Image (cartoon, rainbow, N blue to C red):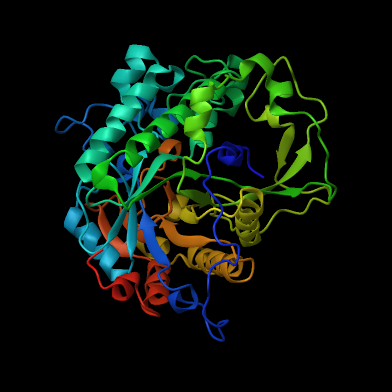
Length: 475
C-alpha cells in the first residue's frame, strides 16, 4: 500500500455498520448511477490555483506556486504565470457545465468563494498553495508556526461558509505535498538535497534536505489538520457537517509475486529524523476524520529494497520499497496508451478501497479524485482532444471497479468525483497535460468543448435518481 495511507492510522473515526451499503440488483445492462446505493453522490473536481488564475488581482497575494513558476518557468513546463492571470474566472459557465453533466456535487478549493446553487460543495481548505508571505516569514510548513496560522485560517472560512458548506477536506494529498515539495523538489517550493537533483523537473534543488524536511512537513500537516478539525467541531454554524482529509494512494502489486517481509518499524528506520508527537497532539489526532478522501489514479509494482543508500536519505527510500514499472517477467502493470500520463489499472482501485476497509475499521470513504491524464503534443487540437475515448474507457473501468468494491466487498464508499471538470494547470506539467471532461482551447480565448468522456459521464448520471430528488431539499 501507499506510504500516504500510513497517515490514516491515527486519524480515522469509529467503524461503521459492518453490513455495508445496500445496493440495487446487479446490473444486467450497462452500468449507471441507478446501480449505486440510494443517495450516492457523483461530482467533478477542480482546485482554485489550477483553474482560477487572477494571481495579480484583488488582495489574494502570491502563493509559493506563483513565485515558483514566475522565477523558474522551466519547472512549470514553460509557463511563468502570465497565462493563468485570465484563466477560468467564469462562475456562471462552470455552474452550467456541472448542470449539463447532471452532477450532484462539486469539489473546489476555498479561494473559490461562491456557493453553487443546487450543487453540493465539497470544499478543500488547503490544496498546496501556501501563502508566499508565510514561506518568507518562517518557512511555511517547515515551521510549527504554520499550525496556529492554519487553524486561524480554517476557523475564518468555517465561520464564513459553515452555514452553507457541510462537507470539508482539510488537506489535499499531504504525502504528495511533503514528498514532491520537500524531498525530490518536483513541486513548489522545490526543496531537496543536491543528490536528489536528478529526480527534479529540471535537475536542480532550491535548497532543502531530503530525508528530513518531508517528515517535519508531514508532522506539521497532521497537527494543522487536527487543529482545524477541532475548530470545525466547535463551530456552531458547522453543525451537521462532516470533515475529512484526502490521501492519494497507489496500489502496489508484488514485483516477484512473493511477499517481501520486513520487520523494521518506521521508528527504527527513520530514528531521530522522525518528529515526535506530544500526548496532547496524539489525542487531537485520534478520530480526527469523519470520512476518508481517496484520490486514485494508478498502480505500480513494488520490490523490497535490499540495499538502501544511507548516504543519500530520501522519504520514499525509508519505506524500503522500490517502485517498478514492470514485474520480474517484464510485464507492465495494466495498460498505458501512447498519450497516457499514467498506467491504467482499475483493479488496483478496488483493491485500495478494500484495503482501507479492512485495515482501518471500515471508515466512510469518498473518492475525491479519479481521472485520466494525457499529453497530446503536436496533435493537441479540439478535434483530437475531444475524441478522448481512452478517458471514457478509463472512467468505465474505474466506475465498475468502484461498484464491485461497494456492492460485493461492502466498502463504505458514499461519493465519487472525476478529476477534472476542465483541462487546467497541472502543476509542474503546466498546461500540456489534460485531465478534463471539457477541452479548453488555450489558443482560442479559452473556449470550452465537451469531450467524449463528458458525454459519457452525463449519460451515466442521467439514469437513476439524484440525491436532491430523494432528500427533497435544495442541497
